[in-house]
Length: 135
Image (cartoon, rainbow, N blue to C red; front, side):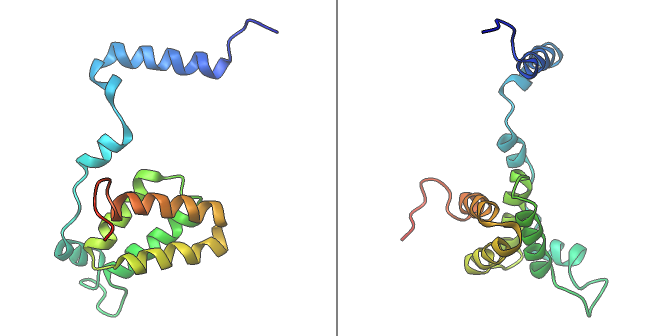
């Protein structure tokens, strides 16, 4: 066996050292921590910016959020923070947990079962936060 380190591991270690030197606070940075800083847009503002205000005959913000959720699911649910944020915004726009689950389930046909499963896990993190009763 070779004693050489994996080049990817070396690159990651070097990047982490560089970040610690640039800003020691980044050592405890997590994507979920950043996500928590992003506020949920109020329903009225969302409808104004993304709903029927500028296109009265178009889609409402709830429908647009569900479409976005579908797209993120089909892409493989790899954009975890974006998916959780979209679920939060869909709920604020008036989507029910059932509508969110149906949107994700339907996308399993197009994105595959693994993508659907991952998206459902991420959505559950938003819809049923840890410690919240399921009753």
